Image: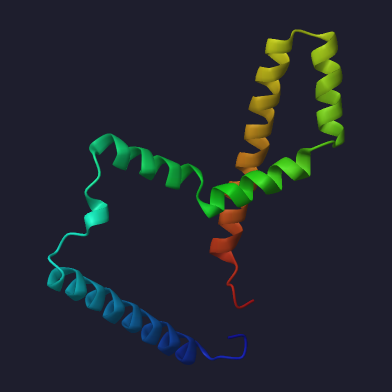
Amino acid sequence: GYYMSEEEAQQELNEVTQELKEKEEFDLIETAEAGGVDEEVNHSGFKDGLINLCQFIFSPVFVQTFVLTFLGEWGDRSQIATIALAAAQNVYFVTLGVILGHSICTGIAVIGGRFLAAKISVKS
């Protein structure tokens, strides 16, 4: 991909997009021929909602992000400082400060990463 010209890259993208559309159309035709409704789809409203929630919460992206952040923060200086602060100060205010500070720091990293991904091409 690195050595491809812009035309070759666009042509490759168009081919892959076309293949995906054909596969999706084939799957829709097979579903219609089979009666149009999968038996597994007939869940109750609550059960279906619970399955969707679990799939959302335990999605691969979420799990990977959680594990990466958890292992990166486990035992570092900021955690040790938080333990010392919680031992010496009001636990609730320390908890609120830690959550707010970490959320802002992580939010800046996520927004900055998205900004960089939009400005820098994958090819580069």
